[in-house]
Image (cartoon, rainbow, N blue to C red; front, side, top):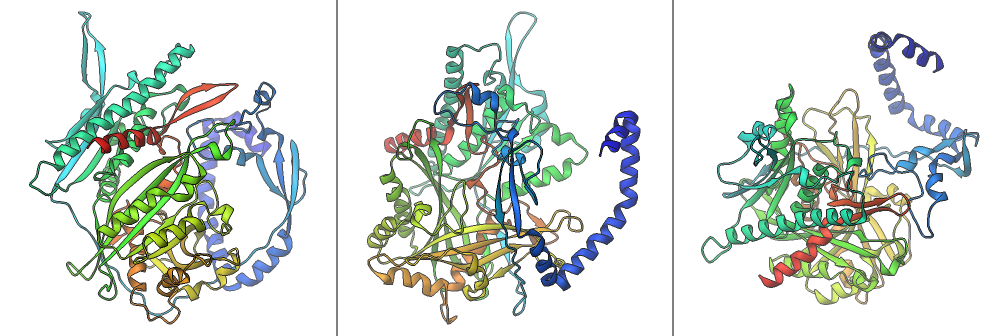
Amino acid sequence: MAQLLSFLQSQGKEAVKTILQDLRIRAKSMESIATALISILRTKSQKIISQVQRHSSQQFICVKRSIIQWSRLEGAEAGVRDLLVGPQQRSREQVEWFKHIEICDQPETPGLLFSVKVNTELSEYSLATQGNTHSIQAQRLLSKQLLQICWVPYCSQKGGNGQRTYKVSETALTAKGWVLPAAIQVEYDVDTLNRRPDKKSEESKQYHAAAVAAFVVLAYCCLWRIIQRLKQSGDSTSAEFTTLMLRLQAMGKETDEKSGSGDSYVYAAAQALEAILAENTSIRMQGVVLPNLTRSDSKYIKSGIFNALLSAFPLAISTPNPPTVPKIGLISYAIRPCDEMPSLSEDEKGYLFITQSYVATALHQPFSGYELKMERMQFDVVDSPQQLKKQRLVQEEIGYLKAKGCKHIILLSHAYGGRRINRAADYNSHLTNKEFLEEVFQTFPDLTIYTMLRDVFPATRLHKRDAREAAFEILRAGDHTNFLQSVEKVRVRDVIPVYTFATLFAIQEQQRPQSGFCVYFLVSDQRVSNIDWTERARQHLVNPEQQSSVHPCLIAVLRGLHFIEAERGVVKGQLIPVLDPFSWISPTTTEAAGEVEVLHTRRKGRVLLSYLALLSHVSQVLHRRK
């Protein structure tokens, strides 16, 4: 390594060219080695696993001293958090301190703070196909009416006569062809949202926080009112249309997030507005970094934008046999912290409760199957353990779907910031607690409620993907038998894997065949007062005798989630599914979660404002006055 560094430092660009040429020469050799390794894993995997097991059974987790911000620790006040190192770009939600932990055979890492000895166990699962492959048809059902919302950057310039002119940004003109003749334009000036480094007083920081909060509130109130008026513009029935939101921005990932750029506030506002407006309209937002439209590969960028916007429309997906259940509802829900301080106890913290509802309606044209449509998203701020246990919003959504004619409703809960499997105990199952299930079953005794969890496992597949393959499934609960060994057992609560959807798509098929598994679990709690409530769900989803006519319908809805949320579009005649259709649960940046930094000090840390929590309060006021 030292020799390589010396070579790069002494020869500069010529050294880089030489190394790249050398790597190109070795490329075929490395491909041959990779092919041989895959072949060995296919034929001798059991022997390899046992050999590796002997070498990796005992290892050490080594934590380096660099994991702690020692300068911050020395001057920190009592109760201050965030003492571990954070990312250089503060808006990133990835955990930076993972880089300061190493797994070693011996605790001999330089700069070691402490180490923990662990024993590891490797296991292997071999999958084999059963029966014949079957084709699934899918088609987007385009709406007759369309509403477009465009975020357009403007700028204010001072002329020679001292007068300021307000006009559209020059770079925005490159996207002129994307804007419909009739559309709502949200004009914004990034400079008005920038955090100015020369304004460091506490008062100026508070003014800036108020300004960025007012920006998103005003935008929401205006858009909400326009959408309500458009819905009332028809006859006695409410007008139905799909809303496409296009966010034009002059800067993308290269934005300096440390400087408090106004672009980051625009991005967070657009993300929050997409979510909160989904209470009233089917909507999808897609961003466009304007310089990318003039790049040499702009054709692929434009195609990606178009395909992402198409995911706003309902999806018709076929079933092997005509569906026997007319309507099925699904509620996907999660919580995210929105009121959290070091001084608050667990009972005093606030959470943003989010639900997303779907309705699957049986259809016979253009083929036999279901029309899967996203109904709406709902938000609520819960600030007590009692409210969190009651989950008022979920019960309201069940009532809403029941009024739509759904007799079978899937409740799919997600864990924020933690594992999803091996969370069967009550203290790990806040969203499927016994009190909540009891109240739901008693309130809706005539419905069949399926309480479920899901987990996603990334994988590297050894199977070569056929040109006509898009995914594979494990349809029977009995075929998950081996997987049950890794799922925690609790005597009064069963977590049963009932369905697995696995993707086969890879962008670089020959180089990185990355795939994964999305496993759905049925949660069956034996402590509810009437065992019939949970056994009805087990009968249909576990389906031990393969006699349930409801089972294929439920599987069709779960399968459809991976296609309706797909943003890759059609590739060579295939609609490519997405592995995890619930990426909104764990966004990669704070802005993607609709959160922005409004205050920051070295001793007290960062203060984030949740746009979604703020807008949920505004939404409740608007809907009460409606």
